[in-house]
Each structure stands twice: as structure tokens, then as C-alpha cells.
Length: 324
Ligand SMILES: NC(=O)c1ccc[n+]([C@@H]2O[C@H](COP(=O)([O-])OP(=O)(O)OC[C@H]3O[C@@H](n4cnc5c(N)ncnc54)[C@H](OP(=O)(O)O)[C@@H]3O)[C@@H](O)[C@H]2O)c1
Image (tube, rainbow, N blue to C red; front, side, top):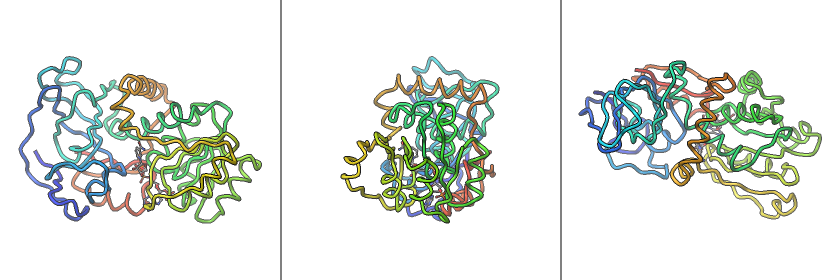
């Protein structure tokens, strides 16, 4: 088999496409012939040694992928050889085969193509956990999504609409705003051109959003939090802009607002039954056509470095998927 190997986590340039030994699945694991793998922001951080998880070297990056099981380890009774699955295993996806814990694989129906499946779990599970579980977003409430044309952002826009919210999508270019309108956003804000606070005020009649979904951080966090509605919930999802922002806590007091952390990986580990129920709901929404991954582009697996460059330069709209 071949895979992109990270032998030294100093960045994307150091990754090398190599022949490697095809792994055997251990107990409770399956081996998957990978058809498609998607890029998530943590994949960018992990090859620079900037992610909270630091795998032993060398490792194959690629947190999320889809394909067909071709070998099954001892103790796996709910998955079989030949079954199609989507996996979120943290690493291993940027290659032709990978081994994953069976518990981290989601069986796929025939109508779930590999490209969509490879771009599904991380973004939708995170946004579902954030909006349904952590924020209890209710029909009729207003949701503001920052970085709304990104991976988790597009999922949040779609889930917000399924839940009956009015969705304001904020992004850095007009093209990204247009994409957000095409997937259901009611209003858009281009925060490169517009003053974020003024635009939020105008879009909410001065009331502010009930829920703010923030995967970007940086300079957007404080003006967004200052704009939140009474009893608002501010979802801390990620820091794609780099700097981790600080918020003056008096703002939480003045708005009766909550700062709510979102850590889907630990939610899956600590509360597997609740996560399984969320995944089942997401799979049924996908089957009903209510949600669908936005695919920026598909590229051959060999072009992984071009995919990384597009994500790192904020070029991607939705998800980039690598295919074998
Ligand atoms: N908490 C959790 O459980 C969880 C789970 C998954 C992901 N995350 C986090 O969520 C964040 C987004 O992940 P993603 O996979 O959706 O990434 P993505 O597709 O690259 O989207 C990130 C968005 O952030 C904005 N951005 C602003 N400054 C940026 C910069 N300097 N570089 C790159 N993007 C920048 C971009 O939108 P504009 O150009 O419109 O500003 C971009 O669309 C990451 O921080 C990731 O680690 C958290």
C-alpha cells in the first residue's frame, strides 16, 4: 500500500508519499480500503505538531475517510468484510488502506457515496453536538455562524436551518457568502468589508443572535460576543484564525450570556450512546436530503499538498476530498 508519511512534524512540505507495509487489524479493529478521505483543519495542525493529539512518529495523517472493509480483527461482530463505512479515526486516511477501531466506523447505506461519506462525520457531528446538545438551539431563534463557508461552518448553517433557526452566515468573501445563501443562510455578512457589530445589529434588528457558532476566533470573537442577545449562547468551536481570543467576562454578566465549550472528540469518547444517537439522526437527515456535505473539490490522493495549500490559504469553500 501507499501512504503520505509524516516522519517529522514540521509541516506539509515534509510529508512524503511512500510504499508502506499494509497493516493488519488488531482486536476490535477493521482494515479499510480507502476510496476517499477529506481534509479537516486538525489535519493541518497535526502535521505541524500543533494539534492536541501528538501521534507517535512516523504516522499517516488523515483523520477522516470512507471505503470498504477488507479485513476484520478479533472481537468485531457488527461489521463485516465487504461492508462500506465512513471512519473518523484521527489519523491514517491519506493512503490507500488504513486500520481503524470498529467503534469509530459508521456503516453506510448504498445511497451514501464515498466522497460525501468521507466529508460527513467530523463536521456534522461537531455542529450537531454544538447546536443541539450544547446550545439547545430552538426553532425561531437566530443563529450566527462565523467562518460559515468552511467545513464545520457549512454543516452548522445546514443544521441550523433543519432546526428551524434563522441563520446569519458570516464569511470573508462575497463568493463565500453566496455559497452560504445557496445552502440556506437567510442573511450573510462579509466581515472583510462590513463592520461585524454594525452588520449583526442590522441583521437582528438590534437584538443580537441567540446562538453564535465560532470556529474562527481571532479578532472576530470579541465583537461577535459583544453583539449576542440576552440569554445568548456563544459556542467556542475552534481557532482557525490562529490566536486564541480573550473575552471580558463582564460581557457575559451584562447579557446573561453563556460561553459554551464544544469538544466533539471528547463527547464521543465520554458519551458514546449520546453520540451514536446524534449520528443516527444525522444519517437520517442525510437520507432525507436535509443535509449534504458541500464539496469544494475532489483531488487525486497524490495531490494532498495542493489540498493542504488551499485549506491553509482560506481558499476552500466546504470540504476538500482526496480520492484513490
Ligand atoms: N471543537 C471541536 O470539537 C471541533 C471539531 C472540528 C473542528 N474544530 C475546529 O473548527 C475550526 C474549523 O475547522 P474546519 O475543518 O471547518 O476548517 P475550514 O474548513 O478550513 O474552515 C475554517 C474557516 O475559518 C476561517 N479562517 C479565518 N482565518 C483563517 C486562517 N488564518 N486560516 C484558515 N481559515 C481561517 C475561514 O473562513 P473565512 O475565510 O470566511 O474567514 C475558513 O473557512 C478549526 O479550528 C478546527 O480545529 C473543532
